[in-house]
Image (tube, rainbow, N blue to C red; front, side, top):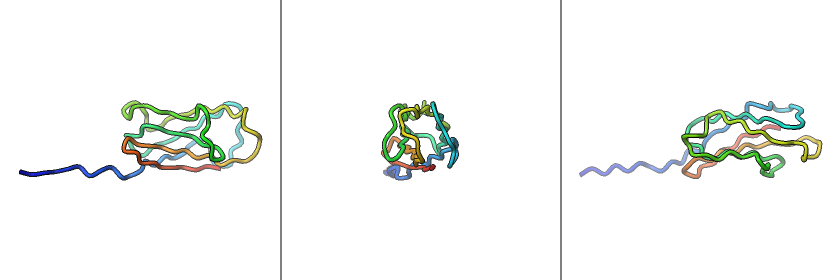
Length: 102
């Protein structure tokens, strides 16, 4: 007999923010474009100033979430100023990876 267990997935996904670029000036409806390094991501969340943005989240079955999700965010309720935006990606195993733009 041979037992061959698959080791648990411990590698976090790596999201990369491709738009807006660091230092961009945005207003109104902002499109956040993300590239993911691997399939299996089940949720992508956008945070601005450390707070999850309403409607700034995509959650789907891994086979339906593309490797290049786009998320639309209404910035009209966010006060003017410079912010740090973080995109967090979660995979089905619960691993989390972050990408930051300011």
